[in-house]
Image (cartoon, rainbow, N blue to C red; front, side):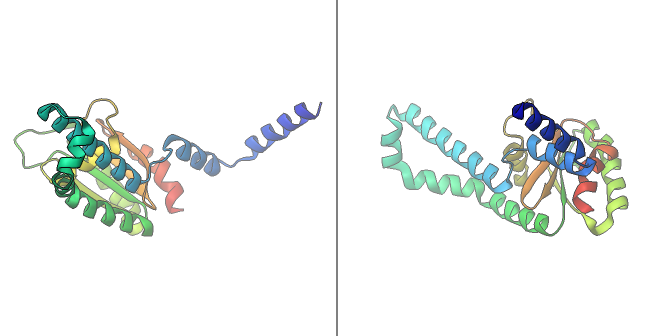
Amino acid sequence: MDDRIGKIHERIGEILLTDKEEKQKRMRWQCHNMMLESLLRKHKENFRRKVVASLASKYEMSEEDVIRKYEDAIEHFVRGKYEAIEDTVRRLIKISEERPLLLNIRRDPCSDDVCMICERDRPNIEELKRIYADRIAFYEIYDSSPEVLLYHIINQGRGESLLPLNAIIYGGEVVKFWTGRPVSVDEYRECLDDLVS
């Protein structure tokens, strides 16, 4: 009997959640452990492991021997590859601590290849700039920039790597992101309205 009453109390508590609380609960569930700094650290460590494995294979050595013999060179190589992106991540985290940030990674409009998906997404982002003005920040990265590595850091190899990638970052956390399709203004607002209110 007590068990049943406890379950009824739980259900009543669930029903009493406001729409806003429910959305926030869903957003947190969808993006478990999406702190930008942690994603960067994980990506960097995976890259380091791949470098070690590649050297081990090339020189027919164990990974432990590769690390012992080439550790300084490996660290120098990894540091060089991630130096610029670490600066960008620090900048994004700092901005997102003050207000929500919409990150847009898209095809360079000056390139010969036009990404129709990126172009269809562009007016939606312009509309968000009009709606939110300075209540949110906007940060754009082109695929011709070394910062494009951020795409892979956020996407974590999920599905095909298609442009654009749009991400909402707040307090250093990737709250939500979309890839390979235009995102409607309403979809953005579903997430952003909760963060700016």
